[in-house]
Amino acid sequence: MKEYRCLHTEISGETVISRSRFITTARPVSGAEEAEAFIKSVSKKYSDATHNCYAYVANPEMTEMKFSDDGEPQGTAGQPMLEVLKKRGIACTAVVVTRYFGGIKLGAGGLVSAYTKCVADILDRADIRVKKPSVFFKVELSYQVYNALEKRLRNGVWDISEVSYGNVVAFTAAVPAIYADEAERELKDKSAGTASVIRLKEDYHSYKN
Image (cartoon, rainbow, N blue to C red; front, side):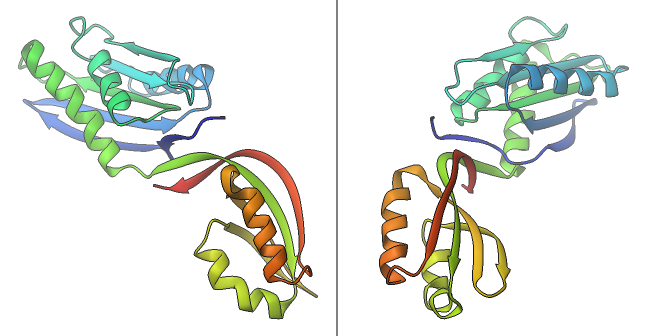
């Protein structure tokens, strides 16, 4: 499993360049099939547009990629869009730039600049997360131990969620895999062996960039 950067949620934006209307829609995807389905849905939504150009990187290794100029001159839309994703190291992400022609031809250089700008601008606004191979834990602590360790836990490698308060404090948490063994040992040591720490699974988890 390889660490990678990707969008956390779908995002869209609109701009006008030389009277042409450009709508950019981007979202995280889990593979080529999902990317193609997303592109199809956006193209259907804007079926009256002049062009629906796209690019995507479908896997964490950034080896599965595809782009389309959708009728724009070859090399002026999809490939520049893909280059933005690659240069920023954004994987598992698809982006569609929809163009409604405004009557003014931009020329090859103008088109490259416009499609590059659309993708760069949407990524600047997007919530980009780092997806890391992680170990997911279920932890149970006494209130005394939890109160003593909460600040350290929340400011450290533990990404805590789903906290419940019953006879003990219970929570689930993700820890980057490279720190998991050390974090588990430290928690058990700091709790004098009273903490119940159960490994649930290993999977990707999103961390703020």
